[in-house]
Image (cartoon, rainbow, N blue to C red; front, side, top):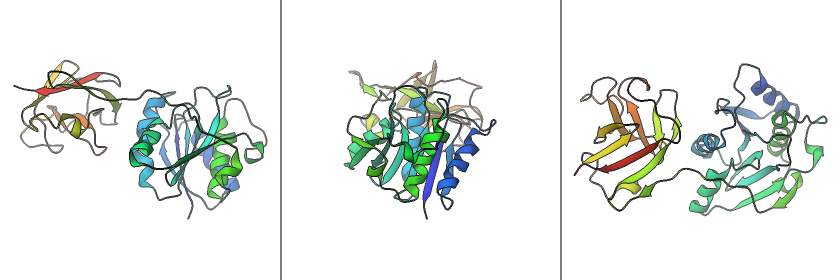
Length: 269
């Protein structure tokens, strides 16, 4: 069985997301297509990094991931296909694979890249504004249909990488990160990992500062019975990162964080 995922900033109202399915089925009618997300914030390459890296590697080895968050469509930016570990990616070479490449370095996975410069693997008529349909989806379909990566283009070894999120430890022991992503519940996923605050006394003796609010201590799960509805709580998200939530509620009543807002974890002492 051949799996392919789609991640775009197209939305679903116009039907552009569904057209990608059609372009794939014309070439690989037996492909199993999963829509990871078509609601990436328009042109937000950093957000696409988070969503793809947080999701793609749960699929079986050999899955092809097509990513179309492409503010440079029609320019001289390279279209690429890549193997990262045992997964394949088709995307613009604009830094959208940075988080996956960082992960590959941490996990010691091998990688390879090709510049998609062989039009025989694209649709016959390629427009300047819809490479998702005309180029990326067909190439993804050829991959799941069995065309070797090396046949799709010219090898290269310098994919574009962009600055992503991180955390910094200060001299006083506090750790400063940023909001990476706001989920559909209004929860703020922040760029701080457990090991980055392991020197602090968890979970009770820390303060999380975000958007002018102060959260004393951390909890283990949503809906902690000791807290009233809409009380701000901090806990570890399933992605592994620090998460700030409004208990038993939907974010936005207490604070309205946005990606890029600073988050600090410090000792109460």
